[in-house]
Length: 442
Image 1 (cartoon, rainbow, N blue to C red):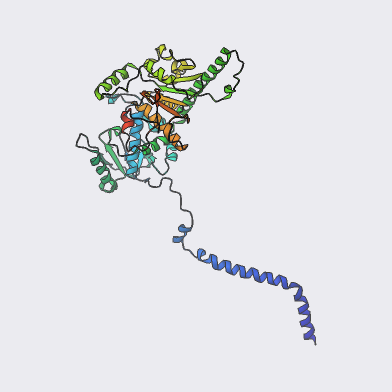
Image 2: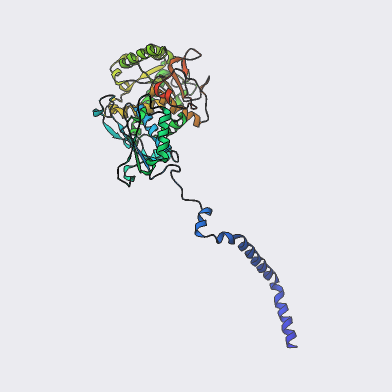
């Protein structure tokens, strides 16, 4: 009787708790199923763990950080030095090595090598930004990264007509896998890197050039010069408004960004003598241009609203000739360093940095006009073409697409200066290094 009462009592107690028991059972079953699914992953050993977890990021995949290439001091003009540096970078990349930070040349001497003034790469360009921008493509290294201080492997570059492009490439291929690869450092001797045989397409050079950012101190100077140019443009706008008896321009153009044209004007005596001989030797008629011809060609460009400042990148020898900035068409106000009031800024810099500042002022202009036989002009246009490609623009034919470039020494289809973009499919840098009149707008 007591047992029966106990059972009834138990049943009465359990009735209200039945839903709780069901929920507990479901939870237990769920945990068992989850364990069955997850357990294979919990059972992996340490050697397998890296497969499931993200690997440690290799900052420079494909470029070894413990093997290096060393090159001689890089010499000649700014743009020859940039080409030589890029060629050294691409050679190191081919050998799957980092390039030891080279010395550039602050002074300009073509024959008096003893007078060359070395300047470290990182005094002109930003070392860290180069490596960040060229991540996975090329890499610069400090000399402090070299741990083995025994003699490097000497890679002697050949010379003469018998040293063909094919032989040079065979030498590099052998150095990639042969005895040379056992050495931590390969030191390349012989020819200056600008004169090395060229194995690399334009797009690879463009990538290296795009990785170059000026050192912060030099970038500050570039910004100062461009600011002066834009101040001059702002002043010209207001003067134009006043001359038309207006307090403001009705269409609101006073509020638009100030734009400028940069012209790389090659009319100095040395250049004119050189290019006249070049024309005669090559039987070409589109290399030299006089000041009057350049002014006429530039005046035919209608990309920008006038008045507009025309910044003239000219040789220092022309800065004392005030006639350089005279004779321009109405609405085109010409300035060079002296008239702009930045000669002191330039005077305190060595040749190489002066050129680097002018290069950036031209490369960042709204419109650039240069000579297609000038390495300076060619590299400015290459820089601008690379930027246009990044924006999805592969042609500047027949329309203003921004960042327009022109060659004043080549006549375009409309009789004005030829629109100009670098051929990014070219298989070598030959035409950029030595010039050509075979240019187009795509």
